[in-house]
Structures are given as C-alpha cells and as structure tokens.
Length: 117
Ligand SMILES: [Mg+2]
Image (cartoon, rainbow, N blue to C red; front, side, top):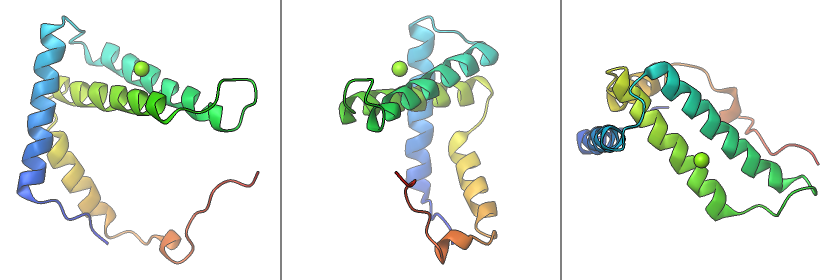
C-alpha cells in the first residue's frame, strides 16, 4: 500500500519548506541543526502536554485549537530543520513511504484501536 504523491503535491511541500526557512532566517532563529532539534523536541513535548489533557483531571480540558497550534509548531520546526540539513523533505517523504509500501502491515487486518480506559 503506497502513499501516492503527485509532483504538484511534492512541489507544495518544497515551497512550504523554502518559505519556512526564509522566515526563520528573517526572524533570526537558530541556523544550527542541533539547536533546531532541541526546539523540535520541545514542540513535540508541547503536543504531549496538550494530549495529556484528554485523560488527566489535573489540567484544563483538552483544546483542539491548542493542540493544533502545537502541531503547527512541530511542522514549522521540522521543515526548518530539514532545510538546515539540506534535506528535501518532500523527496524524503516520497522515498520513505515508497520503501514502507513493501512492508507487511499486520494492522491492515487488525486495526490498532484506542488504549483501554
Ligand atoms: Mg509550541
């Protein structure tokens, strides 16, 4: 099972990667990949922080808007990091999903459900 990516879709991702890289430079954000990785991990942690609100009674209720912001931060930093490493993330996504298409996905027959409460 493959993820069919059309050339125009790949170009859109490339254009987004370029715009993010340009904006990060204009804002004076770090151009060091290791520092960008730290920022990416931080943003992933913020996604987890929002998801925690789904099950923990100790925090405010889950907000779709709040987690959307954090996921956007993850994408922004991921695209920036890809650019800093001179990686065409669109091409990488295409190659990776193509190589994954040869794997046997047992979850096709037995879909993974939500965790038990
Ligand atoms: Mg954030």
